[in-house]
Image (cartoon, rainbow, N blue to C red; front, side, top):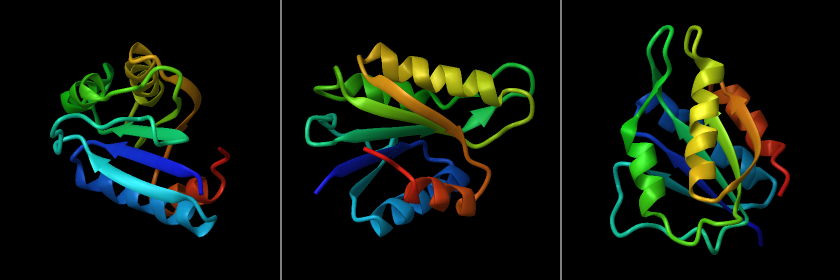
Length: 135
């Protein structure tokens, strides 16, 4: 069974989007784990996962600001090099594309290979995205 890890920042709206992605992915038979970046612990290993999804809340109107906990969580993660990844954010004014680039850069800084990126407006779009994930 293929495994998927969804990492999200503590924002309640982003958590709901991450949970919707999880439900969509589980509907196609994937085994999915959900991690909040505030629950850092000793660092999670990416080794058992076939795909990593990482999302962050975004603030700012003209300059994208990500939640700092995402970069810290990724820095503590183990066996990240060569892992396939997807970046996602909730659209926010004019900074959506910049925010996606920053999430992708955070993943790439850990050696992950970013295969896709997506701005997810609501739980419905997140569920559909989860249903269509290809590993």
